[in-house]
Image (cartoon, rainbow over the protein chains, first blue to last red):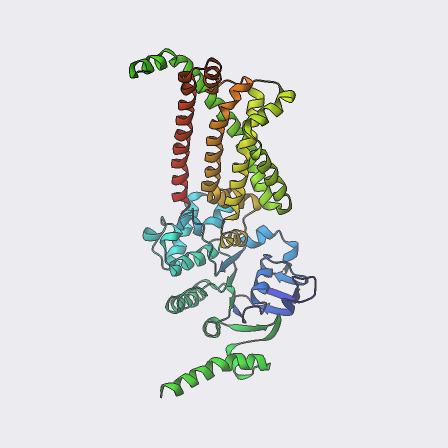
Length: 253
Length: 212
C-alpha cells in the first residue's frame, strides 16, 4: 500500500505550489490513475513516490515505511518506472535494456537472459526476433513495450507509469492499453498511472484521482466520478469530451 | 636533388630516422596519455559542478592560445631543458580538447536516458560507467584525436629545448641551412599526424556506430 499524507511540493520556496496538501491511499493490487492537464501536479506527485522529486512537506509511505527514510537507489530498484520518454539505453540490446535492473543488483547473466525472454514474451515481443536488436531499430510502440518489460524486470510490487503512451499514435496506444489491462489480470501489480487522457483513465482505472492546479479535486471509481463529480472542475472535465462528441454528431447530420 | 639521391639520403639516415620517430611517438604518446588521465576526470567533474566549469575551460583555453615556442621558453627557467618540460607543455596543449569534448559528450546525452537511469535505481557510479561514458565515448575519442594530432605538431618544436624527436632534423637542418635535413623531419611528422588522425578516426567511427 502507498499512502500519501498532506503532500506538498514547491519549486520556488513556497511562493507557488506544484502539489498542495495531497492525501491519498493506493491499495494493494489497484490501478490508480492520476488524471489532470499539464501543470496539474500529477507527474510531480508520481515522482515523489520514488524520490525522483523530494517533497517540500508531507510524507509518503510505501508498505508502511516512509520513503524519505529509505535509500533512494534501493527504493527505485524496488519500484518499476515507465515514462513517456521511455529512455531506452541506445548502446544496449533490447535484452540488456530489459534486464538492466538485475545487472545493477549483480544477478548472473543466465538468470538475466531467462528473465528478459520471459518478459519479452509477456509484452508480446518474440525474444528470437527482438532480444538482440538495438532500440533504434524498433518502432515507438515496440520501444514502449520494452520500456514496460524493463519496469517489470525486478518483479516489483509497484509500478509507476508516467504518461507511458502519450507519444504513441491512437491505434498503438489502444493496443498497449488493452495489454496493460491483461497484464493487470496476470500480475496483480499495484499501478499508479499518470495521464491527461480521460478515455485512457476510464479504460484503465480502478480508481481515478483528478488533479487541478496542484490540488486533488476528487478520488473515486469511474462511476462515482461520472455520476457524482465533487467539484465544478471535475464535472466540466468529463462533460467536455461528451459535449464535443454530441456537437460533432450534430455537425455530421 | 635527383630521385636516386633522395632515396640514398633517406636510407643513409634511416636508423637515425627510426630513433627520432620513436622519440617523437613516445613524447606525443606520454603527454596525450597524461592529458587523458587528467582531462577525463576533469571533464566529468565540470559537468557535475557547473560553477567551476567556466574557470577550468577558460584556463585550458588560455593555455591553448599561448604560442607553443613561448610556452616552452616559459617553462625553461622552472624545468630546464629536456624531455620533462616538453611533456609538460604537450600535456597542457592536449588538455583543452579532451576536457571540452568529455564535458560536451556527457552534456549531449538525452535527458530521457538520464531520467531512465535515475528511475531504474542506478547509483551515480553505475550511471557514469554503464551509461554516460559509453554514450559519450565517440565524442571523447574525437577530443583525444584532436589532442594527439596537435601533439605531433608541437612535439617537433620541443627539439629546440633538447627533447629529441623528429624536430631534431629540422633544428639541425635550419642550423646547417640544409633543406633535405629539414624535410627529413617535417615530412615524417606530417605523415605521422595524418596517420594518427586516420587511425583514431576509424576507432571513433566504430564507436559512433555502436552508440547508435
